Length: 111
Image (cartoon, rainbow, N blue to C red; front, side, top):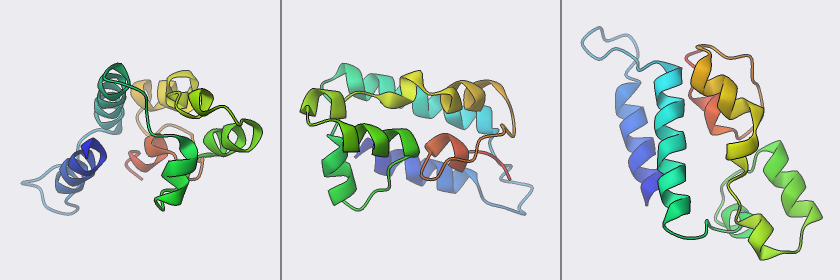
């Protein structure tokens, strides 16, 4: 549910070509996403990666590797973005040089 709210707000913020609706900086979008993920993780365990994949969502390279190597549901419910360099770059560098598939921090970059 929080993912749908975030996606809706980000889509509304990214109206291209309309000066009355400027695009939000990628650093701000990254920080908002990180804050939402921290709140979600604090309220309980995250959805397992296998359930995320089964729901049709793509996994980033690190999530895919973790999902393939682990049978422990607890490991699959960790917020891997908290330890990923893409989060750090996304939160601190506008137009960060990250190009992972299915990474939300890559999706936030204004390219």
